[in-house]
Length: 314
Ligand SMILES: [Zn+2]
Image 1 (cartoon, rainbow, N blue to C red):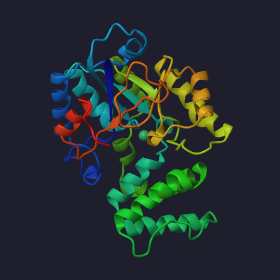
Image 2: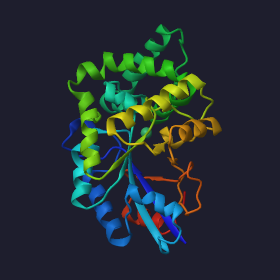
Image 3: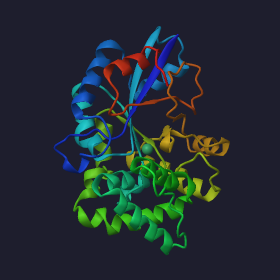
C-alpha cells in the first residue's frame, strides 16, 4: 500500500539574519540537505497530486511519497524557500494566517521574537503589566523559582490556550507595539510575507492553504462567531487573493477542533485538513485529520529517514 509522508516546516534560518539568531528552526544548509536527500530516496508529490493519492487508488504504487508543507506565511518562505524549491523542481503547500496580510502580527511569532530578542524577565514583566491593565492581574503563570525555559513554555501555553483568544491577541498586539515594533524597524516584513507575495508562490507551482486569521487554537470550544471570523473570513480572503478555491487547511498548533470546525471547513470548500500527529497517511486516511511531521532544528537526516521509512519513534 502506498503511504503519504507529509513534512511541515516553520522558520528556516540563516545566521546572516541576526534577528533570527535565537529563533528555533533548521538552518538553510540543513533544509537543503534534507530536500536533496529526500528527492533522491523518495518520490516527492505536488499539492496537485493529493486528490489522486487519496481517490485514485491504482495510480500510486507501493512506497512512501513525500509532500512538503510550510506553515505561518513567513517571509523566508517567499524570499528563500520558494526559489530554492523551484530550482529543485519541488512544489509545496503554504499555509497562511490572513491577519498578517493586514499588517497584524499573530500570537506565536510575537512570542517567539519577544523571547529571542529580549531577556525573558523583561518580557514577563511587561506582559504582567499589560494583563493587569486588562483586569487580569497576577494571572501570568510564572513559577518564581522555575527554570526560564519552563516559564517561557507556561507563558506560551497561557496565551495559546488558557486566556480568551481575543484578549490574548489584544494584549500581545500592545506588547508588540510597545517593544518589537518600536525597537526593530522593519521587523514585521522580516518576519511575514505580504499579500503581494502570494501570486509569486502560485506562479512557482505552489498552492496556498488556510491557517485561520490569527492562529487561533481550535482545541477548545470556540464560539460560532469566532469560527466565522477566523475560518470563513480567512478562507474567503485567500480565495479572493489567489482567485482559486482554497481546499487545504492546517490546524494552528496542529490541534484539530471538533465536528463544528470540520463542518465550517467543509462548508467553505476545504477538502483536506492537516494536524501535526506524527504518522504516515494511508490512502484511506481521514482527510480532515491528515498526519504531518514537523521538522525541527535538532532533526537529523537519519531521524527523517526513519520517519519516512515507517520506523519512527514518537
Ligand atoms: Zn502555525
